[in-house]
Length: 420
Ligand code: HAM
Image 1 (cartoon, rainbow, N blue to C red):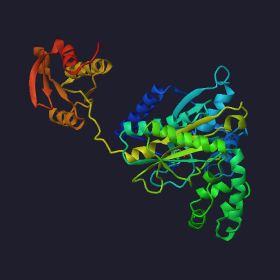
Image 2: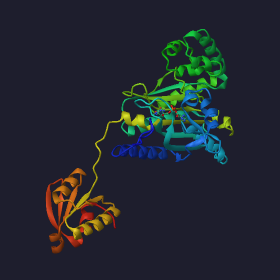
Image 3: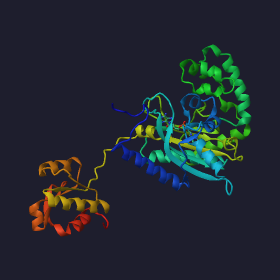
Image 4: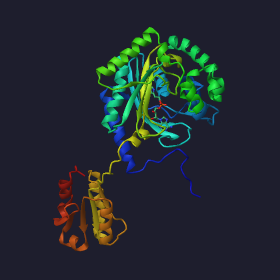
């Protein structure tokens, strides 16, 4: 019986894989230019890391994590995001000891048991970046500018940066109370989840996708109207520095994000043409999280870009064909020669292919064409005897004789390779 992949988990095949590698290479380049260094954190963490950081009463933790007891009886979770793990590592390795400021990035798979649809998968990939130790709104603007710079560099066109401020503990308290009063007055219109979460986490109602709740929330008070003076100043600063960097944005006072750890700045990049799952990136400030997870009082801010969603927004490139040479060999001795020559050429960086099956010349030429070879080298027994071979330029559709004993030098000269 055929065994297929798990629903929502995808293989990434050639030539699509090329697009992934380009996204990853640009991400490394941009983030390293801006002073980030790479961190690789495990895929499996203790379950309580996510319930304590993302929040017990979020959709992610309540409904979407892959959480199970391992064989030793420990409750573990396959990471649904990277921020919590990076914060854990930052604390665990006391990265703050000599200098609290740290800029870390990570690229890799995340796991959420959501209903798969366009742009939503159960295993998906994020480019994730976090900055620790800076409270100044300049860094908020810089982090957002990096996302926008990266998106335009990889060719994204139709997107919009939306920002909001979620305030701090001080301004959140009176806001939470008012929001609870507002929701209590509309209890019958709310879904079971929103009613249940109302007591401890009323903000989650903004995130609810049920039409009844969405309608109620259009009238709900906004946290931005409750900001304390420090948060107001900070949010003004963020906007000011975004303008300094020429980054266009819109304020979305209803954006609360699906994770509880955010304070002050939160943001999302919304792309056109993605349908319901239209956020290609999301992020924000989490000034309490390091302390809440057992570290010192150090602020943080970061973002994650969803790679599958970003790829959906980018134009499909024609896969580039970069097979340099196909060696068509006819007969046992020529095939041996082709075999060893192709090994040497591949080792020196000239992508070369041979036919292992001893097919006819016509069939081998067809394969060379199918794999998009730039040149074909034909070695038959006659050619081998006379010390010659035929090199055919598939683009110019011309061929010429070249001496067999200089073939390696000849090909590397024409195609550009190093020493074997
Ligand atoms: P998030 O908004 O949950 O934030 O995810 C960030 C991005 O990951 C989303 O904008 C989306 O592009 C992508 N994404 C999320 N879920 C899925 C899915 N099921 N399928 C495909 N793509 C998905 C975070 O994860 C935060 N850790 C971001 C952050 C970093 N905040 C501060 N630092």
